[in-house]
Image 1 (tube, rainbow, N blue to C red):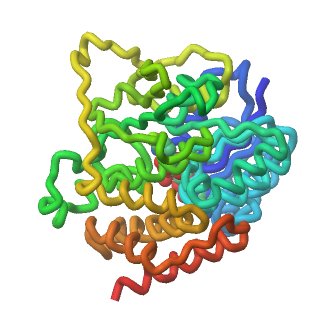
Image 2: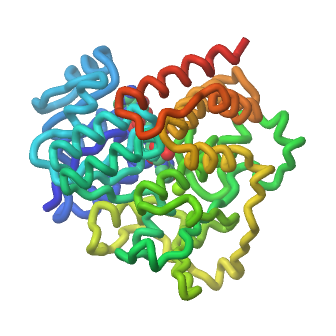
Length: 382
Ligand code: NDP
Ligand code: MG
């Protein structure tokens, strides 16, 4: 029986993680659960799974939960509560499914507590990949990818060394606006951007997919998870999202991972690896129905966020933290209707241009670069 702490339980990944836990009660047990403000979803989860510790984003939600729940367990709140839920008890695994940089501290604390980390929260690895990977090595814990591309690569690689690999090839669907020109992107709305052609995900990552920043964050995530130089990471446009990613070896062989676009597959594998379990209720891939798979070379001028992410990754140090922080703020401004779609990339670009990266930064330096980038993006509004 694997004991699991889950943070971000009410989000797209969180809900699907609980679905996997629910369908294998003999394998997995939920120990601690954390969510933000979605009380309706959260209270149902609490009543169903009866976790031994609960954390929410604020005092008022914590009060509502305590009043409504029908058994006794501590209900914490805020950043402190989020960390407590991540490190709780003798859980074997933390599933980090929160959105954004707030996932960094719980990840680091859970590593210190000796827990393996199933990491969906890519912003954490982008912000402080060097610290997270070094700490996981030091404490002997595994960082298990949840993102479908990284899960695919992990399964193709099965431990092959960097020397044998010539390229990691991340596939990209292209997001909601893949068929629009840059000119046509000028007036797109939030509603249009939230319609992803293949995947059903949280709002922020859906916008990131439309700007292609998501793929950029994934490039940086891949660098840290697989310890690969950027020269060995490539992105390929693949509209069907059937091949989740590939590894090309030095002898020219390419191994690919195929499947339906169903996040429960990589989530379940992250929970069960190296074993595989039945996927209950999942559609099987019917290649004869798909018929054909298509690929295009990535156009880095069309998708400037991807180019910026490669540049920030190569610059290293605090640059990826600034890229991520500026993007988090710009995307929320777009979702609030305060800036246009193309302003997301101009705001991120401005933040990166005005930042001088510090190399090999400490956690404090990373967090202060993150904070400064968040405030400077807000000043671009006027
Ligand atoms: P969602 O926005 O759907 O969910 C985010 C979760 O984090 C919610 O449970 C939310 O709670 C919680 N949360 C937000 N702020 C706080 C806070 N201050 N304290 C505690 N909890 C908080 O995001 P997704 O599930 O789409 O994505 C999560 C992560 O996984 C992201 O990093 C994303 O990039 C990555 N990912 C997602 C994929 C997907 O298919 N969705 C695919 C691959 C990676 P509440 O809603 O209750 O406020
Ligand atoms: Mg992905």
